Image 1 (cartoon, rainbow, N blue to C red):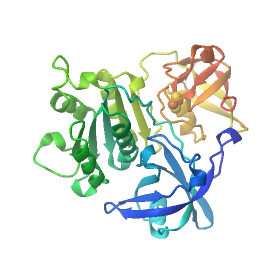
Image 2 (image 1 turned 30 degrees about the vertical axis):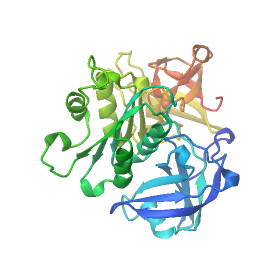
Image 3 (image 1 turned 60 degrees about the vertical axis):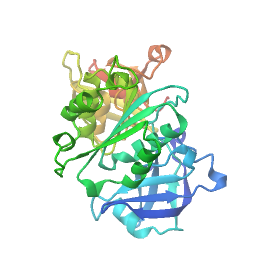
Image 4 (image 1 turned 180 degrees about the vertical axis):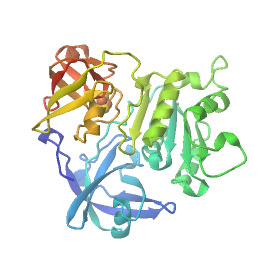
Length: 374
Ligand code: FES
């Protein structure tokens, strides 16, 4: 992969030694890298972040991102990796790398993070689909370690019992923190004799979870567990995230408290545009990105700016796609947009012309934005 990032966003790589390699299920495995003392600062990370691995495949350097399963206090870079097919990066990596080998690993990054609140009594809910368990596991271990009063609920969607990655680690966590951690598994391809736990994790399932599993709150008889939810973490495929995030929002969780990490390219809007705008067609967009100038045309303004640029394959930075993380921040130099929602920019930043591409609907025939001025 061509390194397209400008200097300010350059990713730093270092060779790290593989300390552990373990097969978890038929198609998933775990890797653990040692962090040498001299690189301890560079490899400090927050729960929910990821690293990029480099591998040489047929004379090309190929890069791939993987979320960490380790929590910061474990002081190791542990990854959970799924092999989707024999041609994949994951398959080659598993076949080639041996304990003791060194591989280029980037410094950690990513915005699927939470602010730690060690003195509060919080209720945090996680939804994970398949290998999407990886950053959620990192968060759960971290919260159990750093927030002694916070309680956690995990809803983990998986094909069948044989496919549960990290089952042993999850069982141990439940055993150790039985009073504040609950885990429920949902099987999309296995009948287990209870309809609630069969089928995909989606909007309908969220309603059932709220009504049947998060109903009675022992700590407060006046309300339900769902009423007490402070933060929701979701990781999995785009369709699953879209369905669950919208269900959580409809059931009263503010968008700023719904955090998600996409595990694949997904160019649909996560939340639908609720307002109507005059239709504008053939919009000219000029933009600067990674020290290069681009010009393109958008068919119309029915979708937000970021999604349209991603569909056209421009390497625009993003993470949350919902106005929370600031990854897609840019400066509007000409034209007009409506910023649908914004949990990231301050009023002063907005007044100075900064916008979030993921939340911007274009309102003029021409616009000019700059992603490099941030
Ligand atoms: S991608 Fe997170 S604010 Fe736009």
